[in-house]
Amino acid sequence: MIPHVDVAVVGAGVTGLAAAWAAEQKGATVAVVEAGANCGGSIQSQHIDGFLVERGASSMTGSAALMRVLGQLGLRDEVVVPPTNASRRFIVRNSKLCPLPSSPLGLLTTPALTWRGKMRALREPWVAQSQVSPEFESVAAL
Image 1 (cartoon, one colour):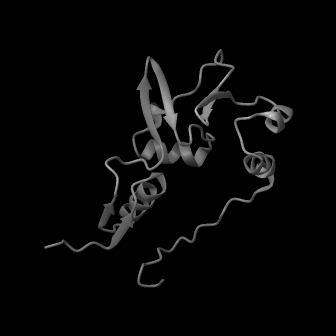
Image 2: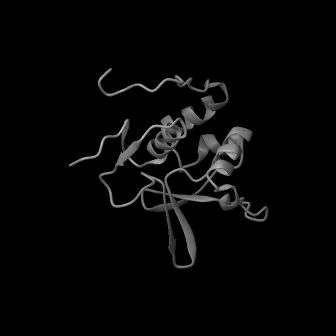
């Protein structure tokens, strides 16, 4: 028999795990269902030939709110700040290593991003943060 839960979260990616944690913080009984073998969704880390390879997003802004949540989760000490001498960063695109641009002009000429990706990156400073409702929406309400 399946036990009663207040909230069922489909997907154990970062968003699903964050939603499950937030619901649990409010006292809900939560079940997380994931189709894959690992949590993290598209974000995975692998060590290959002595290098750390990040799949998915590999950076985030260190906002006070994020650091507060990481502290509540006991993960603040796990934050990895890139060394200052690591001035070049790379991604793999179409099976090729591409340096990430370090300037707005480099952003326009890099093979690391599609044209759509370049335009999205250029718009980023003007994109408003989405406002998430403080109330939980149930599947039944959909």
